Length: 250
Image 1 (spheres, one colour):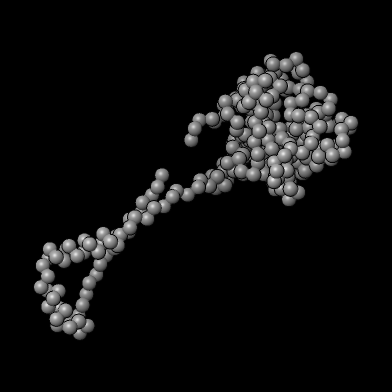
Image 2 (cartoon, rainbow, N blue to C red; image 1 turned 180 degrees about the horizontal axis):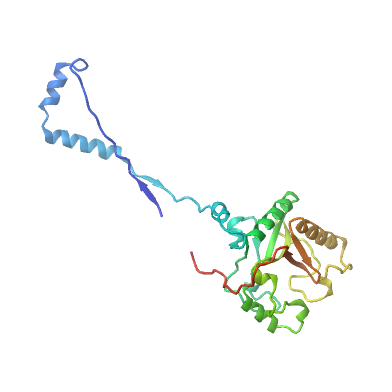
């Protein structure tokens, strides 16, 4: 939407006998009213130009600052340095099908703010956070639960996951410039001991990457899940939610 601001100029013509010669006064007095109106119209038309002003970019910083800590916020609208790879919006997950209607990451405001602080520290090291999953509606949790017999890797929807509370995030680290993922030993959603934090048979590089991820996130209130190197829970809990992801076009 564009706003058009029109500036109206007032033309004030004054001339005293002391400042103007008698010939000039006589010439002005001899002009008809119609001629003067025509002159004014021409000058105004040549002078007034519409000023086109583009609408300002929406300030999510100001908007989100007014919300309570419990509000669900869309992370990348607040901080665009995060990279999204929301796997449950694609078929690239353990169920081999999309269960989200769109690839968005929502988190409780308090959780998003903590993750943004962690992101700042990672960026000083040359890394950025890539996110696989954030808030997950409870109905989707039932889909996950019913799609596998390895229940130890999926939270029971009867009690809910912290994903269903908007306080858990699945993530990894990437190179800030090339956007290449740092080696972590397994892919996301790998069900097996190689994804456990206790598994020590990986290369030194993989083990160091996992430690870096874990130790940095802990400083900002996130705890690791022992069987999934990518899953982190925030320290505070909120009620379960089954609100759908806001996927409508803006």
